[in-house]
Amino acid sequence: IIDGKKDALRKGDEALAHQVGEGKDIMSILLKANMTAMDTEKLTDEEVIAQMSVLMLAGMDTTSNALSRTLELLAQNPDTQTKLRSEILDARNGESTIDYDDLVKLPYLDAVCRETLHLYAPVGRLVCHAAKDVMLPLFKPVRDKNGRMLDAVPVPKGTAIILDLQGSNYNKELWSEDAHEWRPERWLSPLPAALDEARLPAVYSNIMSFSGGSRSCIGFKFSQLEMKVVLSALLAAFEFELTDKEIVWNSAAVSFPTMGLQSEKPEMLLKVRAV
Ligand SMILES: *[C@@H]1O[C@H](CO)[C@@H](O)[C@H](O)[C@H]1NC(C)=O
Image 1 (cartoon, helix red, strand yellow):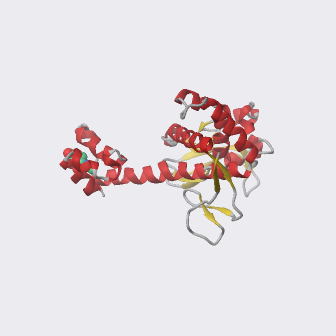
Image 2: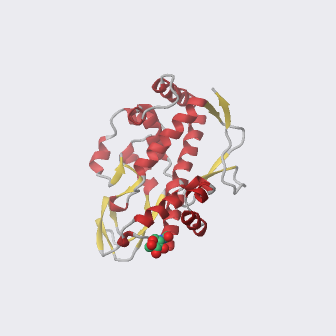
Image 3: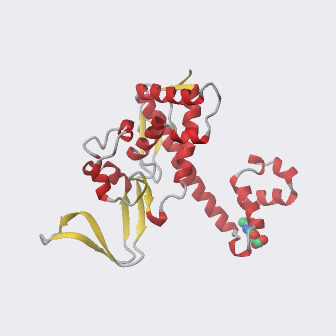
């Protein structure tokens, strides 16, 4: 693919127009940017391919599966779906689009997106490695095997650590007893005080789904916008209903749906009706 794109770029606009994406695809844009970049910023083929993997896995699979999950939840909760649709239609006010400023401020749409990302992190777990020896402070003290209470644990350099992002999102001590319930309304009133005190490193509303710190998700603003754009367009036009087949969510680097336990094919069927 990369060789084909380079070839088309060399031959000019006419050849690009015959390419998938007509030269507006992300790989062509990266290659074009590389031509004008300063020497120190130029990328090799290997780096461009690595960037494409990141964009597909971290940039596309995550948000598209989060959107599928939202549609499933809206199909399961028809009242929420109706309420959200009327907020969107009101904001459209007869037009076919909603301005950016208005879209990002819609309170119920925002609550539905937040709550879905809170309860169903597309990437539920991350693995990282300690770059140096550290004492890792604990949220709550634990008893070690000798009966001593510890409020921090030593982590030697190089230790692999599984960060349970979803586990933090589910923590009843932080999010209250209904932490496991999909309840967009939770975002329409102040969050529990325990969350402020916990000082989670999350970059987004105490939700760990985009991780935290300097390695947090660089696409988190973009993905929220993408979810809102797609949902507002779909809900204005269609109603979503469950079928009689079971939807199963599979644990993977990015969670994905299949129809039934036996299937391995990523897909999610819903009944869709024009409104
Ligand atoms: C980026 O530009 C440099 C310098 O022209 C070139 O050597 C390199 O192959 C280009 N990278 C890609 C991915 O085309």
